[in-house]
Length: 202
Image (cartoon, rainbow, N blue to C red; front, top):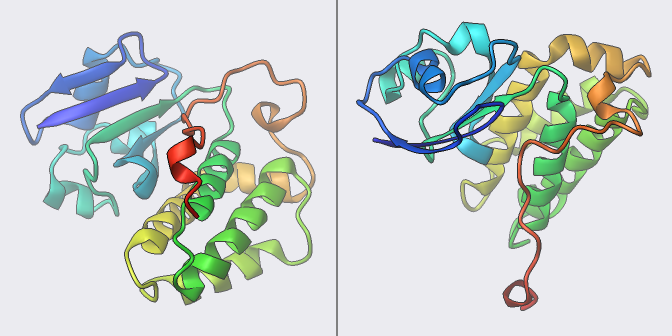
């Protein structure tokens, strides 16, 4: 299979690997940083996992499913130690909400609400009972969209709350991690496409 590897690696790019190769071995071949905190498996509709926890898992559908993951688009993104997983997730969720066709309630209203919740959490300025609100919204939206777009976004959001649970707790107490604070000089890890003229039809 072909795997696209980026983030905190010395040699980002596309690699051809044998299906079933452990995730850690795939990342090692690309020079993944030893201090990496987490790995996004499957792309923007995928899921976050602790780097050490996913390292020995074979990169194959049935093995990843046991970990709540999927090869998805064949994308692995290594999160640097100093980056904020919640901030990265909030950026992607805002993008996914904006890419909705707006043809059903889960996309038109649910994704934008969840993206706003994550934006508040990432900034360390949660409004009200944010975790309870997120849990309710994630549960209500799952499986109810006219397509799988909202399900992918929900998977990403739910995995971030689990993998970055300690950070989420700190952010909720108005103590965001260094990667989420104003003045952070690190670069964004997950690329977000800029809207082009061909997207203005809506």
